[in-house]
Image 1: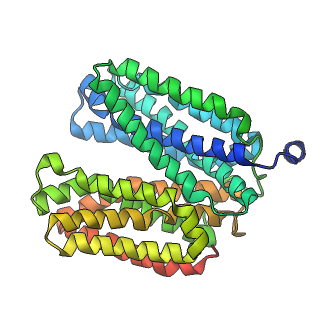
Image 2: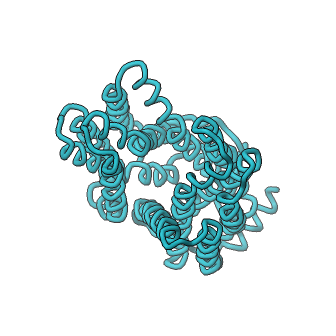
Image 3: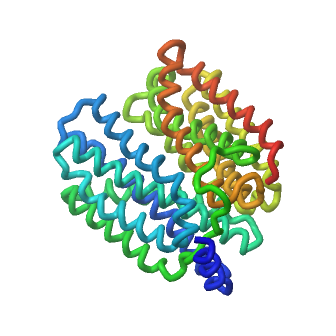
Length: 388
């Protein structure tokens, strides 16, 4: 195993990531966001075809998250063994093949298996593209991670828009998915030669419990993803029930959040280079706290929308800074650290909304938002404990 790894590293010693590798990395982030958003537009069709109720649908959706979580811890070992290119080819091809099956499956059991495979593809892609992004950023010698993550957001907007547009034009969901999958595979094909045929070699165990700086980085990602999941799943409920907005306008909160997060990430590399990563994390967390304060304490819905926008711009660059910091920490090997941080962050997306619902049920939704704000204050404080 060690001899193989050394041979791969020697083979690719001259392969210093340049502009082409940067472009391929952006495409991988775009593809992951595109596929995830495309599936979100298909959920109603999956529910209709399988005939499940809301509770059963929730359990089915957990299969996607479960598949992603299961795949993330092993991705570091796979990239060290086979390189980022081979892992990304496999993972992107996997979720592209599964995507057209999702709106036509009529058996809940088969849908659960399909979502599990789709989740494995998404989770593996998420880890592998971040491993490549860290290598490419270090080779460039300047902040690039925010821009990479910005392309994930752009891909999400494009995926939701493309799938919704195709369906509105009357295209059958199966054919809409086939068009989307073909588009993804074309993007993969044009990127293959510029994906890295190697990754950082594995050192020590392939799996390890996060510790040291990696545990702090993962914890920060957990909180930020929890905040993002809170806005995604609860912003419309808050605006309609607590600010008396009509149901048709409930999505404005997430739209403001998403738009400002995307803009913040696309401009984030310059901001990080100018202010420094530490100020970006502390300032971003406090800006997000100010956004939650506006939402909780000011009774006008217009200022609630401003609050959601502040959360988006505040959270935009915190996670990218954390992934850049993985490349500079020495608590754990990168091949283990990236999956660990990605897994902890993804757990925030899965656990966060359910936790908010639990708190809201026994107390109130504003109090639940206040808990998230308090966790973001903790992010601002603990971020000083790690090198960025």
